[in-house]
Image (cartoon, rainbow, N blue to C red; front, side, top):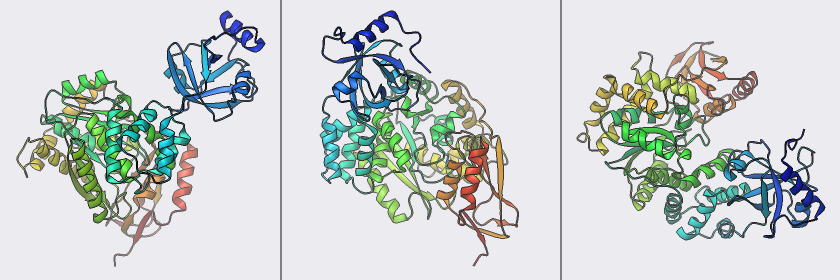
Length: 528
């Protein structure tokens, strides 16, 4: 395999000069290589592939995993070196990952300057945090600027995330981190208000209320620019679910047009650079399965402030297998969200909800999308618990927006949903974002049957979520788990408890093996 067969004459001459050393093709002193598109997707990571026997690597000491600064056409970025031992890359060439290639705006055969990167002060601050030194706003701003600009390697990002995990960010640091994350991105402003938003701290499978709340609240006249993250440790995030229904990767200008036209939107925040450092950190948090309190508070509130929100309602589900396990822990989190929110100019209200079991039937992007469509269309088979929870949260947002007196929000929300106005508004928002589409359906569906008769006594949220992820969610949009029972339901032996949905036989088998090994995933027994 070769990637240089169609190289230009100029590129060949430059390569020859590099190999022979007969001339200095770059009088500025930086080493110069020929840029090649490697065609390797490394997500957000900027990788430069160089031959292990490359003269530049040997002369400059660029070992595998070294950090280098690459430049071309007035653009530059810091990338990680990966050594290539095969012949698809030739001497004098540098292959770039898709992320690096897009960032640099290169054409195949362009000359590429390669040099040692500048010393990053952020790396010193990260090391300080590892040793327990608190970080102030100035230091966190330096770190967040480098995070947003992709100047830090995944090793440094993982170190920072780990050093801040658990309770290692105090309240002052959390406020400083939130402000720093806001400062390195765009911050929207709207011509009318109050601008409201709603968020859930997560940990509850299937709890896809945001599209319902946005539809109800904007149908009543509020401004609600809803930006959401993709899943971090869950089978689906709001952006993942919405992407099965409409485009969510809108640019800033399109987002503005949608909100000005419809009063709200349902988009992926990572596409509009509102809190770009957060999206980079999320990429690292996902494989580490870390979602610490301080970083979660900073993540949520930085994006709300950046989107121009002024009043935010935050749902905190509480349950034995939810992210928040007790009312006391929920009170602590609520206090952090309220205090940090106030520090960055947000009016934050919190509500504690039942987190003892999944909400709705679907767990996974498309399965959750089918649930919310059923609720919006007021279908008879729509999951009642998802409807009731969405109405409760929409009521709180309507009252925060001063669209009705205190205590009147629930009736207003219910009338808006039952009249079809919320469904009409949802369709209008999807049309403005690029068009409403039908969610996909999994190719493979396998029910999981009750081993004995009895009553559903417990459902483990975390294990159900893990089963959905092993089935392929959220990367495979149609994959996940469809619940067939709820707490307190009587079941007969052989009755389906849930079904696994997968887009490949391998992922289905993977999820089945996990479920078979988890005796406490759904507990069926006699009521004591």
